Image (cartoon, rainbow, N blue to C red):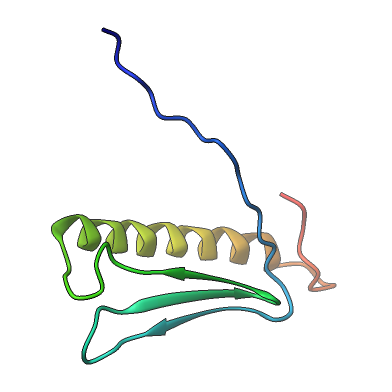
Length: 90
């Protein structure tokens, strides 16, 4: 039997800009929720269960934070240093 490889079935692209925001919602009686809002569309990032945090949830949260920080640095590098303040297409 061969090993089945997972592959992407689809990709959804959300563009940042006016109205896009990310908000963390900590709750006292359940696990936190990260809301990513793109105008009329919201994406909610939650843990694997609303009442339990696993080691995999913690690892994913750390990975998300690292990659979000790297994304922010890349966006800043593309924006800074230009007189018109419009940034560049990298």
